[in-house]
Length: 229
Length: 263
Image (tube, rainbow over all chains, first blue to last red):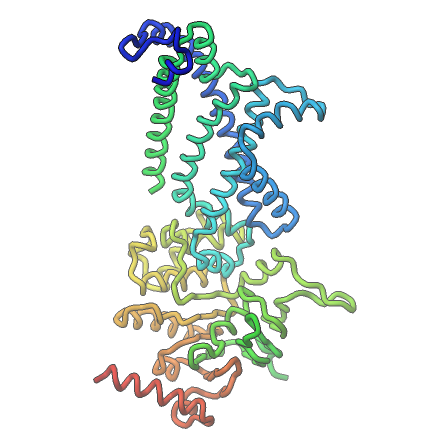
């Protein structure tokens, strides 16, 4: 039993699983879940926006803009999300940007998700047959019109599954924001563990909370994918 | 004085890597001419077409369509190359039909034809669709306007593609092996539409392997080999009495293949 190894004198064994603390924690975790959902929703909104724009730019004819996007994606992919969270939290005040922990968290999540979504959008657009672009060119469409009216509508359905993955990753990554004192789901559980010394019960309960949130997201995505079919 | 050519090509070359695909091609096409372009694979036929509307950027040479230089403009004493947007604008009146149709997969037949006038020429959606329906009628597809490309046969798809090009009001039409990807029984319906266009006086370059069609419908025949125009003559003369050894060898191969398939 892992909990026993960590807290031998306080933790109950499996046969003494403390259901009371589980029920006791529900309202606290629910409150944390609301914060997690807020963080995720905002991260999704801004991350998708950043990612869509960056993904479109990576197919544009502007070399400088393409280079900036490439550097951005390189950085996001090449550094741990946890490091990015700390960087945003501690670096932004240096540039005179005093944001609350919550908004620092939103910035970090959006920045991280945006980099991955940019790649998803780019590869989705590039997966469309080159003949589609040639046909668009042949009727006088500009590069921008071809992407907007021909490639993007066709790639939406292909983009949906990897985008869902990214959204799920984003929800789970929001747990990293517990390190910058945001009372989201994971930190709420940790607070109760600190008070009650019941890590096994609380981490199990925490896992169930995340599973429920992510199952709902997966259902929504399935529905969207069917609608785009 | 004679009418200036609708299409004027001078010294057009295209090199892929270090392989020359088009080699200093010169060509003048007058309004209303129907050029059939034939030759062995790798002769540069498709590349010639694709260099005319700059889907492929020529390595060197000049293409002038209806008095407009496709690469840029002469300003004072220097040549200013077009921006991509300007190139797109110059492509508007050159129709192109592809071997693999390349219909927009997410749009109905009607919207495949309407999207160009609507998005590129700025015609209202309602008006663009109305005109699109007329163009589809011209290619005998009035019964299929709401269908998606995947629901149409190859021959129907290719006729939609022709309507899509016509909707832009082209002065010149380029056909890149329009029937090569079709089942044999569907070739006729596409050739018939092209024949109708020729009769209506459309200026066209048609890369084709349909020799009987080239002979009947073409007003000129270009035989290409190794990136060059080897013969440029009226089709009947070419097929009855090719002047060059290369053309004779090509026709012999084509005829023997046809004899084989006929049994």
